[in-house]
Image (cartoon, rainbow, N blue to C red):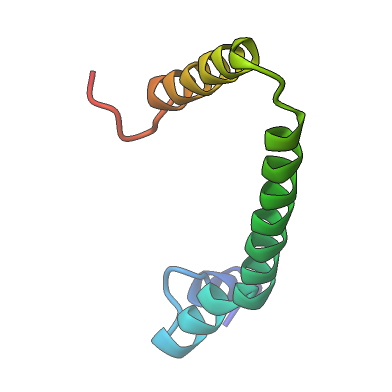
Length: 82
């Protein structure tokens, strides 16, 4: 078997199910830890933002920002029809 044939046989698409599962599950713990860290950071920033609000005008601006972000997320959604 030549090197190119061996590389073709060992490609990811042609591998066995155990190797595929090992490749897919790699880094699952780090993704969970990053998600937890992101949620904690978002919570801290949310508490700081709520404490910094100083009247109805700040709430209007904050609502406009959230509406803009939601609209942007809808506009660039990958599964959007149209």
